[in-house]
Image (cartoon, rainbow, N blue to C red; front, side, top):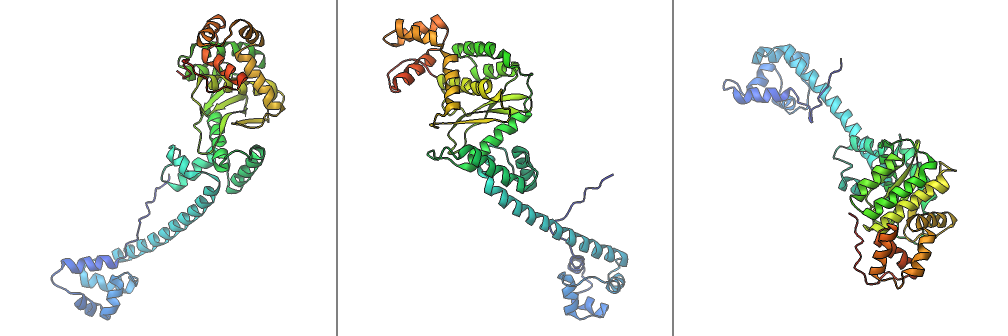
Length: 362
């Protein structure tokens, strides 16, 4: 059986009881009590102020003078000493926690975490939560993981305004959420059917976030949404979590075309790159240089949203690209008009064209 010991904020010295007794009694003063005890008034004053202990000899004298048993005074003194020792130990623990927290703050954006509700006001609990989120057991491991991810992900993105601490925190939150998610088993040969179902969801654009998560879960892909932190220009992130691939998004741009493209871009990484390397991690940043890997994922997403045959038909038979033509093509091929418009804007590098097409996510 375990006993929960409550450590008082401040230990109570038995001198406090002597003071209280003198305050309520009319028959004796502090000077008179000192005389009865055979000590100087200054000596007794030091006991009352907690500067001297109540010894066995003094406890016997107090018993005679005040009628309070000597063993009570000794228990009181003993408890005071125990409480004092425990309070000191508690303070040592607090100081150690503060040292740990100061180190944690070098690698973790604690203000952002508190603002988003991940952390509370208890240091020990917050440290445990951060260890869980970052999947580490020690400060050394946290420091290593921070430096390792910083080198791996951000050495190629120096032109972006990036807060390394926030970027790594976002990745940690995504991986933390992914570890907790349950989903079906994943099979690569079912990706073509998954793409078809996603395209239909994008076309309908009804409860799209929920619908996308449901269909990805059905096919064994974990889907994670984590709001961006300050100076984290992330669109998406794909990686392997235990036995399942993960697609993570920030929804920085709440538009159906951007959302659909990013989902399929990350699905492209799963199909083309994570299939061969389950240790791979693909973080997609805004305005990141397009290397061979990113180009392949971009092409995969582009062709999945609008096939090459469909796009050729669009260019041949649906020009000029007015809203009316876009809607006509949309109905014919069951592709959301905002996705078509997004492709037109990309191909023409014209992102300010006037249109009444609704791009919102519903």
